[in-house]
Image 1 (cartoon, rainbow over the protein chains, first blue to last red):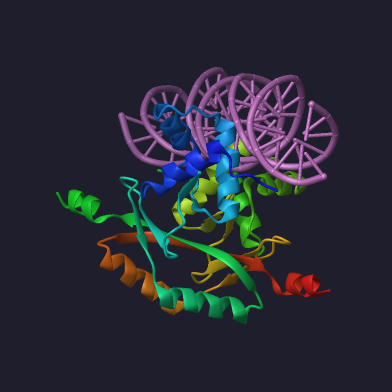
Image 2 (cartoon, chains in turn cyan, purple, red, brown; image 1 turned 120 degrees about the vertical axis):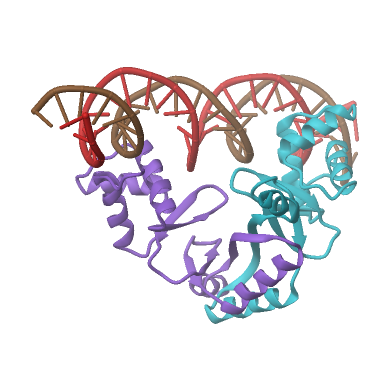
Length: 129
Length: 129
DNA sequence: GTCGTAATGATAACCATTATCACTATCATG
DNA sequence: CATGATAGTGATAATGGTTATCATTACGAC
């Protein structure tokens, strides 16, 4: 039904090549810079398609959605509200407890998103000064 | 510095009077219906102010922000992706583990948001049929 | 080849939210 | 009370991420 086109392959390669969390605009800009111009609408559709294929993951932030590689173990995110740095972490017990909490409410879980906000190591030191 | 004006009091009363999770538009509509017309910009500013006062809480969803009463114990949310129902839950151990995970990465936590997606009890039954 | 389906890309439209700006309300105090 | 400083209001314009539209192009099956 859906196709993995040249443009989508380019988006996928770009995202797979780093650990960054990309937004649509950054993807478009990077591809243009790499000599593979692509329409912004195509980027949005491509990102949505790749995510539906399970080839990339995403986090929904307050202002925009960001995409990252999917070939990593499940993890959640800590975001520095000062510098924007995104740190990944995972905690099996938390996952298990979430399942338990959902079950207690009769919820059939399909996904979740845990985002923690604060100051990263670097910015915490900066604040001390 | 900031004031608790008539309009803001009206917003606060409205939110305190139920367990709903309101978006800005719903608040404006409800106040108009209640005979207390209010500008939409005032609603946005009022909601932000009330949250900064600690008088209401919020959850940031993918499309919009929703506000609820703050006079409840801390909790997170489960959202039914089928009917939109929002269920609240809390889990002390999860909170504790989050703090631990943050500390391990050198993060100074200021807040977090855990949202779980799935099908609520009612919709799960509906899907069986 | 050719038909049907999907994708592309430029652009318009959408929609929640924020900024602007003229005006009003409130407070402190001289 | 008058006065000025500050904050709030509300109509509306602007912003910005995302989605819809639509004509055109690419791909796959037969």
